[in-house]
Length: 447
Figure (cartoon, rainbow, N blue to C red):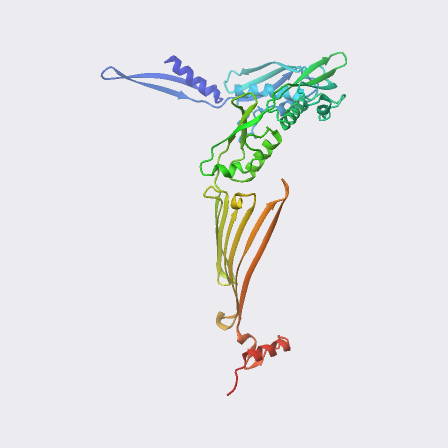
């Protein structure tokens, strides 16, 4: 029973309730049975009332408090939970302090201790971080030592943006290592190991760095596996890849493939392409992990105007129709003034080639009318347009494409003669020549 109480207490403490108390009770029942009841008084959440720093000279307490995740309890932070005590958050704060100092030139910084004292009321914590800043460093000599025959050290050094005399920044060192790793990947070395070697010159406060690019075999793509696609067909994802199975590994093409898959809009943003060792040291397996999301849309709208009375609009679209990557859309608009119907279909890989083809069909009915007495209205003219268009698109470069469109439509207009003639006389608002044409076309032949 004591072990159970301890586990429950630990659970409450992890949620910030250090004042929680548990009173276990045993209720005896007939036939040698018992009920075990835990009476729990949760108490309030324990807050971090004060955060102090010892040993800091370069930055003030207020500045360092802004860099960590934990916040001091204040009345206006009633929507935040960062002011409650959490041992895991304290460990995270230690790492945040280390990163902050390392990016500001303090290469020897370390957190000596981080203590949290609970007040007697069991509701408030007082945290104290003891730090040792050390000296502030600048970058000294920057070198690149490549162990790979195809990658020359002098060529890789030109990619390094760090210059001697600049303030030491651990983040820039990490970014440079990542850049050199990606560059090695461009030449097919997927598992190139880039390690920065630090040489402190404590007397001159200089940090000399040598980026060592360790030797690695050239790698080829053995297989591409796709996971997580339930509806979407594999070919829809594979055609976005910029390299195929058997090609030399290229990290730039892998990143470009990931961006193209994300831009499809069929999956969540966290599309991941993992690089795993293949059957031999010079083979790599690419694992594509995707998570599908809804690609259909239904839009409904309604309104009212003095001209068109009630207006209703609806459209339904699917950008990944049947998991084939096809785009289908149907929309229509209804009112007393106009009716519209649109249908669109797009095939992104026409005939299995890198061509997109589409077809659009539409019909639009338009009625113009005027109001007469007693709120009646007479139609002045009617216009019906029916047509469609065919589309074809193809890429010119990796980032540019060209589209062609051919549109064909027919429009039929019906005019009400009463608008142009009143008791056989042409209305004055029309030009005389146009009235004459209307008169000639509408005059009946005599016997």
